[in-house]
Length: 235
Image 1 (cartoon, rainbow, N blue to C red):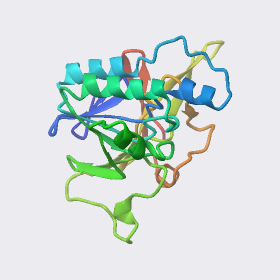
Image 2 (image 1 turned 90 degrees about the horizontal axis):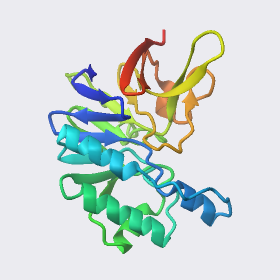
Image 3 (image 1 turned 180 degrees about the vertical axis):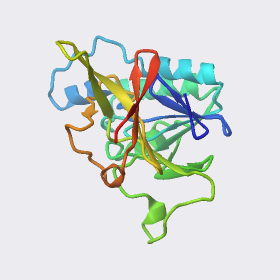
Image 4 (image 1 turned 30 degrees about the vertical axis):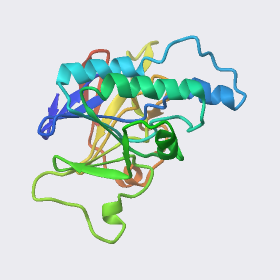
């Protein structure tokens, strides 16, 4: 689905055609391992398919850059299994695309770990690409922190993650399912979490966490229903 020059993909990603950039949010890599390191006995037998799903998107869109909008890792702990996850991530995706991370609230010390592991990924607080400002969304944009407002003559969107938005769909009788969704405001778009572990924030029932989403007036949800996208008005 094309929205203001951005390609929304039902696999929880956005593609910026001008710069051939694939954008995803909230990978939470190593979620189960990080929880186990803290004493929670989560199952780790199921493989993490994050890299496989990103590689499919990379191939289908022929992306030359991949940007992750924060919460790349669930917790930056120096576990050998997490290092292996990141090395596989770099080897498979970095061969065809430049990799960039916009750090989120779960990514404290991640840049230090990547340096220790000698992995070729650059970390940022936010990026500007194709008339879009890319950041995690747990804090205000740096562009607005000095009292200025980030605007261009062309339509501008801030692309953020952090909120894990979802929409509840039901048949009015007994079936109800929560589907990840993109949220659209005039100058802000919130991506669904790419992680399959991430619980969704149900729109209309749970509050937003970050200041950007709390201040926004969302007018549309684009919901990921299997391989299709469903546009729903919110006003």
